[in-house]
Length: 246
Ligand code: IPE
Ligand code: IPE
Ligand code: MG
Image (cartoon, rainbow, N blue to C red; front, side):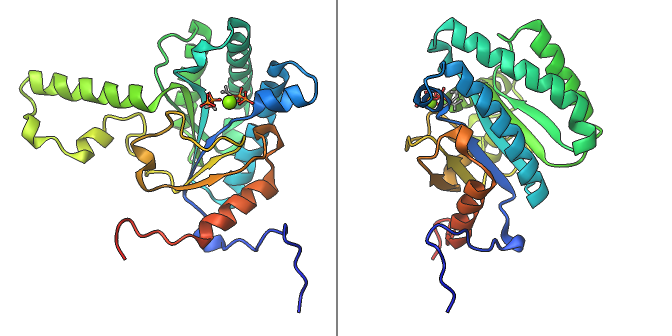
């Protein structure tokens, strides 16, 4: 009999790779503090992790990768930290725009982008335009995103249609709400991973996560690697998804 180390990763079933993985990239600040570094060093390490993981998941055949990069609540942080996170996002976008075609990835942004700098908005537009020409894994970056804000926006859009006489309240369906979310046209996440030790949603994809499988780990985001993702996907492959059935 083969002796298997408790921590070894089971072989992944290549026919059951989750089509859509969502991640709350949490634990950057603590990762840095543990090393006596400023929190911003954790965000920088976290950005590297994001790029490595995206490449790995694309190779695995994941079709949609949705990451929580900055929440509607993260504005409460000191302005220097917010500024550094935005600077890192901008740096990533510059690099992504150069490499998207070669790596064959698409980018999309979930959230209210109106308070972002003009420079950032221009980069996002450029990334969106390139995404029309590429066909690979779609990376959804949640930026100034909150699940409640997203649902409030959908409610306003529907109310406007009612006011304009295009829709009656009794005809509103779940599908009409889904189509007014940032994730319009994208299937719900199959697997949601939260590193960093907190066991909560923190306002992430409240509607879309209705039947998502959750995986929580104490590993801090900058320490997440291919093996940690294999462990999460292996756990997902053990789950029985019933959607309320038997
Ligand atoms: C997640 O890491 C990154 C963002 C929220 C932008 P944190 O900065 O929340 O790290 P911790 O949770 O304080 O360790
Ligand atoms: C969630 O992490 C937001 C992102 C990772 C972008 P937070 O660190 O902001 O969440 P809380 O404050 O622990 O709930
Ligand atoms: Mg955090």
